Length: 148
Image 1 (cartoon, rainbow, N blue to C red):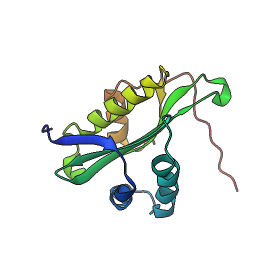
Image 2: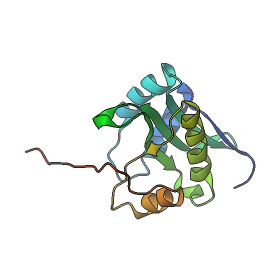
Image 3: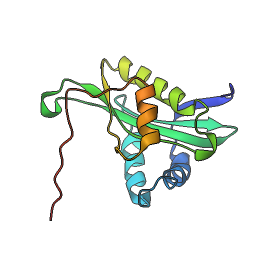
Image 4: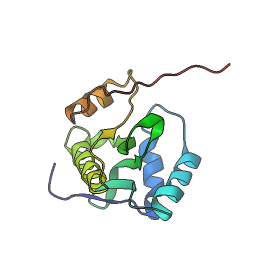
């Protein structure tokens, strides 16, 4: 990836670009969801809430969002990354890695020593990327039940 890639804090003006990038995933349109996330993470932001974008030549080409979560199910404080996207046009060029490294660096500065995330088992590209970032199965497992 060329040196003109900028990883920066998201700005309120990035909202439409984020919604557009998110539409490249197979999930439903979530414009209202992203409006709420922006309010919580960008407008009202705190040091333990991180919303970063990757920008190249003035265009947002990726984003990553995470926070510090503490004492859920007895877990000591840890970083939690819950959203990550890179434009299909620039995937496998280092953008995801640069965003991952930056959010981990910022999370570490808050005092946490572990970062966690979840991934859909059917999304092989995402799983491959996360494994390449050093993530492995942790001591907690996700359990779920369909509600009728």
